[in-house]
Image (cartoon, rainbow, N blue to C red; front, side, top):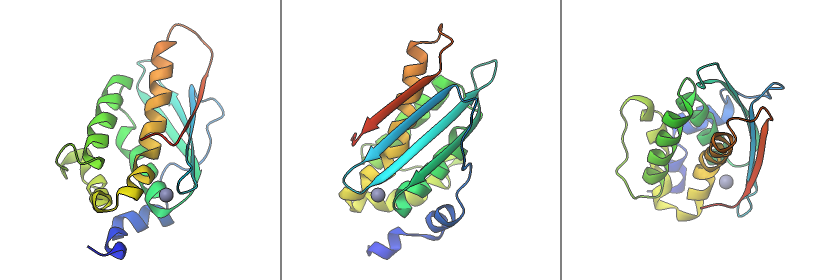
Length: 160
Ligand code: ZN
């Protein structure tokens, strides 16, 4: 596979016109992640509803096409899920990106399967997993403080 095949149509569409871009001033969770090896930077804002489902999710980010499009697709995929459903989905997709589990292209994975090409470029896996690690960190932090009313704000650096 050539590098330009990695940048398939779906990835480029999400890079040029990312979904769920912006900030949420009333977010319950704010998390930020850096991938220092590529310079990718993503800030996520999550608003939960009364049933602790992800009501709104937005992001602001800069970085390569892989990181930006992966973030855009991640926000589409986990919106509407409960925290636990989202965490399961994140772990499942991360296993695919790391080659530990076969890629699916069914249901919520349909567009995400376009990221399959990163498997052949290990250095880009961190670009693809950045927003997944970032949202995972925020959701876990929120879960651990669920009885508090304070907003959760976390930052991660260069996580695998
Ligand atoms: Zn990158």
